Length: 553
Image 1 (cartoon, helix red, strand yellow):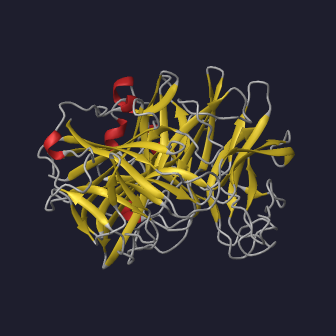
Image 2 (cartoon, rainbow, N blue to C red):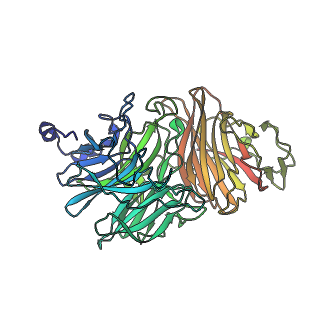
Image 3 (cartoon, rainbow, N blue to C red):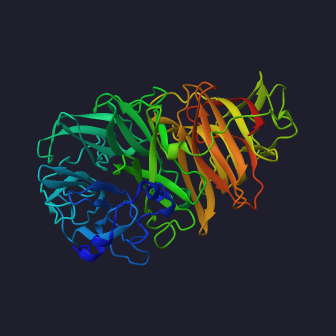
């Protein structure tokens, strides 16, 4: 393994508090040694260095050579130097298949040595049977030696498949108990207690976050609470990656974890208090986090993101380019948020009735136009009633109806009250209804309450033309109500580049709002705003929209 030179190490100095505040301006912090450094985890070594580890990938564009858990170190969290790779080509534990790779490392000190937990993507049990493995080393820089038995063995799904045993993260409690969190969308996030040496699980595992919504767990203790950070949505959708981090907390490391609103993370309509999400700048896919505390007591969120202008390491739709970023993490009212929740929360101002519709008549107003009219949509009883269509807009489908009207000039907030009974827990992919900012069938931002497998979520989806095809991804903006959900799109023009920016808002009562991520549409377009109800016709369900209201922002 390549080491830092003594001369270079001597030249590194700790940042002053003032310099520490400047760190976010230097993102991505991994740029000096890597174009991609995904699923990053940072730990402090006994030598005073910070050590960073990442998923196995090539480090540079055009390199084409996989680095097996690339490792870097830094004196100040800002300036990083590549150390080497934790594992050489062909190095693997006895239970790993030849075609395995290693993802999402987590490194912790145990006694006088260090333990690295990794996702082992393929084992000798069966194709697709992943596990959590461990390696030990005398220092955080290695050399690493695999343990030949898994910490968490492959877990059958019960239907002939295998649960995704990914993304390990260890926690040590004040009384010395150690726990390992692991899991992903197929199976959910689980926690198991660890043996004293940290190399095997003991007792019964407990699920702490629902399947089909969360992965990438990271848990810290603060002021008597255990905070579970987890990522949602597709990690790797190139320029439309909506990956983001939310949190819940519990008094017990085994849960139950709930968000700021008291919503459980382990049910069909799972909660999650936003920590970081795409905000309209160059970075999308802001997720899979770690957390460190510097010498001044400031917490920092370590995560990866994707530059939407350069989303792939090489060819389009290949390896996503996900460098490591670090941003200040603040705690507001007992909840974590990046940069003190920077960015003003959208609040409605003066109403704009000329652009709004209360659906008080017996037919649609003339201001509305349909893309692919649906005769089943009707106005009655003070609402637009629209049976959910067996159609969609994503990819090449483009057969769903879209009901549109012109948006007001200037900055504004659009709001609708949606009633849509999607049931609970059952699979009803992907019935949905909500708001849309629409340029065309292949260029839109869609905010909808949606059934995603057994879960019910509010997804802020985005599709754009890209590299001769389309790219679609979603950001999970919030939690829908049992049947009624209020949705908002807050709009303004970015003064730097003229892009149309839309931020998603969700409420379960029409009073308390959760604000999610931002999607943009090109400055050269004139998006219209409207409503959609599609995704599947079985079982039959009708979306009811009480109104579409615009107000100044």
